[in-house]
Length: 124
View 1 (tube, rainbow, N blue to C red):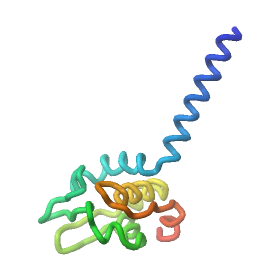
View 2 (cartoon, rainbow, N blue to C red):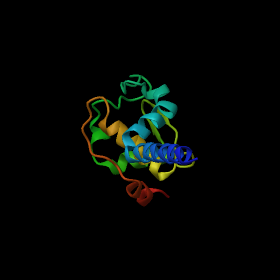
View 3 (cartoon, rainbow, N blue to C red):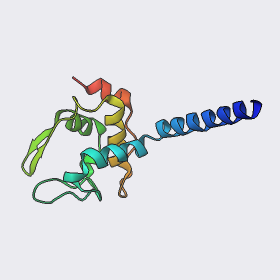
View 4 (tube, rainbow, N blue to C red):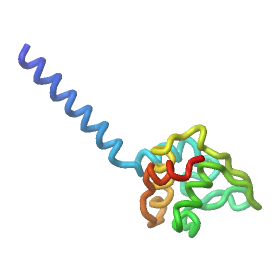
């Protein structure tokens, strides 16, 4: 009985530590969100498709002021080379922050992280 309780306690601690680790790393969560929602257009390597979807890898826009990036993800964009849907009704603030953090730090990009609070402040 005592051994069973110890094993269950250890399993619970390991499980909670795993959850805390997943929540603590927004870039990892952002990669999952990117792969599920963005990679079809912007490609898994962030290089996009020249005639339709802009590259995120090495992009000055992605690595610059985060506010326009946040607004683009939330509201979408209609541009010369294509359209991007808005994600404000599909992703919450933490998910938007995570995916933007991911694209700002993936593929050699070196911009800082984006917080859920920054997203919340721009969400309409």
